[in-house]
Each structure stands twice: as structure tokens, then as C-alpha cells.
Length: 320
Image 1: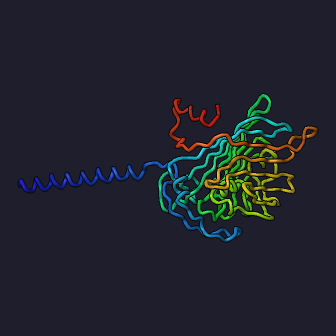
Image 2 (image 1 turned 30 degrees about the horizontal axis):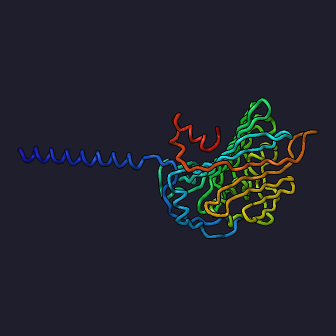
């Protein structure tokens, strides 16, 4: 009788230990990851409209820089063309690696080998036009494999007249959704044949500048440019060239030239850019050049720097 009681007691203790171990294990598996922490190269086949090339080979320098649990944040002095005049402002480029769900096309909460490692760029601009401010943000999610187009691109523009939002999802075709307070651009949903995205070229440059496309191309301009100029979202004829530390895209039909200046040595940080096009309406229309000049770059797990004492990091970025 005593042996039977002891056996039941021991069995109960064993079951309890196993249960607690399982709970603890589940909690560990569900720990959130703010960015991709694994470093294996995921092999992906090239999309049919891209030049065949091997998957990007991640060097030890790349892994140490991009998988260190930090984002790269760069601040820029901005001279923005808008309504035929130049406006002073600021721009921020935030690059960070993340695990991405290829089907849902959102950031993964948990690590899995089926996730797609991506290099994300959040690019922001802030400037005033007279009495009212502009706030612009573009997000690009680009596979680290460097063999496919961006999985997703989005853009939002806010100012006192209203706000607009556009999103591109890379599926069998590019699937576009767009919302605006302008009548002719209200609520749209359509598909496009895949083509090079200007938005993705900024992230591709950070992986390997030599992989950037050059020559006569078809490129979909940045979502920001499309919205500010009220143009049709589609691919336009373009000519791209890669010189020593500058990548230049010319759109003859749009009378526009974009030049991205970058460091020719790893990590190929972006030093600034110049975007020249005709801006303004009527008598105020003239060819102007938006210029961004780099101020400062820091590495930081910014998502955890959200207390008042962390505002000092804004001073470090020369934002105050």
C-alpha cells in the first residue's frame, strides 16, 4: 500500500516537472525577435525577368554588421523641392535585418527556417511647406538572397490637406492597393507585371553595389515620387549607370535624374542623394534638385530606446 502511494507520488512529481519544462520551453520559443538573428544563406531561384545570379554570399563582415541585434540609423540634412520652391527639412534612413513571412508578407514574430531573411529600409522625410508640414515614409522589404524583387513596398504621405497610402505586394504579379483623398486617386486596386522597383535599389545597393542593374531598363519610380507628382504607377523607360561611388538613374520620359552617392567600401553606407526634376505648377514650375546630405550614422536597437532618457540619441543623430 505504501509502495503504491509512493509510486503515485513520484509519478505526479515527474509529470509536474515535465509539464513545467514544456511551459518554459514554449515561453522561450515565443520570445519576440526584433530582427533576423540567424545568418544562414537562403537559396532562392531568380524571378524570370531578373538576370540569373547566385544567391548573395554573406561574408563574415556582413554577418557581424547586420546580425548584431542593431539597426543602422542615418540622418540627413534635406533640401526638398515642393511647389516650385526649396524647403529645409530632415530625412532618416533606417536599415535593419528581419525575418519575413513570404506568404503573409509581414514581419515574423518568431524564427523559423521557412522565414525569408530580408533587409528592411524605412525611409522618412519631414519638411514644411509654408504653414503646414509634410511627413513621408517609405518601407521596403528586400530579400537578403538578392535574387528576387522586394517582397513588399509601402508608402504614406501626410499633410494638412489629407493623407495617402500605397502598398505593393510581390505575388504572381505586383499587386497594388492605393488610397487617397484626391478624387482621381481615391481607392484603387490593380496588378502590374513585375519590373525593377526604384525603392528596392536602395537596399540592393547595401548588399552589393556591383549587382545593381545598369543600361537601358524599365523601372517603376519610387512610390513617393509617384504620389507627389500624381503620376500613374507603372514602369517607365530608364537608363542606369554605376560610377565610382554613385548610382545614377535617368528617366527621359519624366525628365528626371536620381543620383545616389555611397561609400564604395563595406557597409556601402549612403552618403546622400540628388533628385532633379521639374517641380511646381504654372508659373512656379521649374527644374529643381532635392538634395540630401548625410549628417550622422549610429547603430542601435532603437525599438528598446523609448524612454525620455533615450532622447539624447536624437542629439547624437543631430536631429535636435
